[in-house]
Length: 430
Image 1 (cartoon, rainbow, N blue to C red):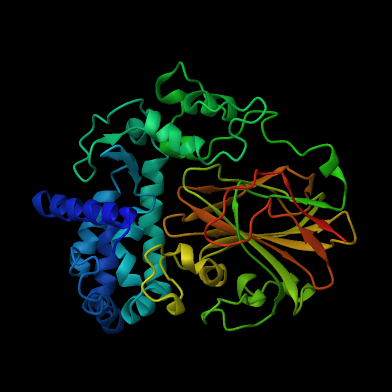
Image 2 (cartoon, rainbow, N blue to C red; image 1 turned 90 degrees about the horizontal axis):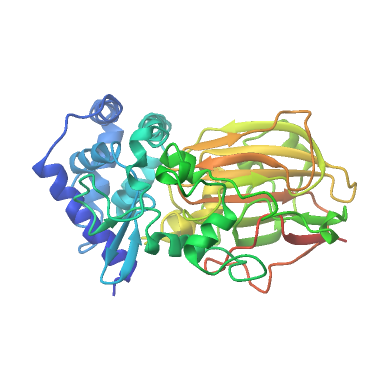
């Protein structure tokens, strides 16, 4: 039986298909460029045609072919993400393009298509167009208190991000909600936590991206006095623990069941990858689309290297089959393939030594912005970068022999964990 979320996505896609058919728009040049690439390459034409032929009966059958897929993607480039209120429930299509491709990604044709470097180059260009829209004042129409006035025919009862239901969804992600000075009331929770101007239109945010990359107010998330101990490692992102292993290999079959980590692939064969080795430790955690998306240094140390790595956007692990949560269930796999950023930090504590922070884009998260430079010295909790739009995941990689007593805040890493506050203790080196 389909979940409530899957039913919501199916209804959204049905409306999106109807919108594209009733009001077809001229294809944006970036969409047209992908279309031409598909038709001009026999392998790509086979892949994009077969992916829809291979979707089992009953799975997302509203999208029948790649031409419909392209038309819907074309519509999205002019839209901002918003909430729907359906029978007292709310829904967010956090990854709209991902929702369109959901079942097709899990097919053999989808695997062939979305690991293709030319396809990912074209997708990068498409996502860059959407990113430009989300960074523009035109995207602020979704940053309102109540119903959205701009036509949004693909959503049911669309509401803005400062409506009570959307603010409640944001507040529900706050691991400190209702504790100490952190208010439980959703509106007051937002004002207390985030830099904003509630008395101004759109809470003072200049674009959707400005809202998405919002910062905490000073003093809301700080490294505690006890955690300034050099042996303590703090959370680099406001994130939920997904996985933690102490036996990661330099080279492994990361596409297999269990999605083992392959360090050379994660680090894109960087020169510093050789400083690590078999039996390294990898901690991975997930960032929800509704939460804080900036990165902060987990240790005191010097930034010795940075690198943005181009990669995939919609490839998921073949071992996961038809993943209804794609790419959430493929977080280990995409650490090796997805567009990502690497930040190598030499800790001031010799027992920790060199670590690698890996920010991994998921689906529409096409931009991983590094805000530090090589040679910078960072203190624990200092800002080092940010994601732009969408849910995401990140890894911390430690060398063999670095023994860490991890603190998952009473949880076992999995897909069903809750946020640990950014800058809170997640481990102590022994």
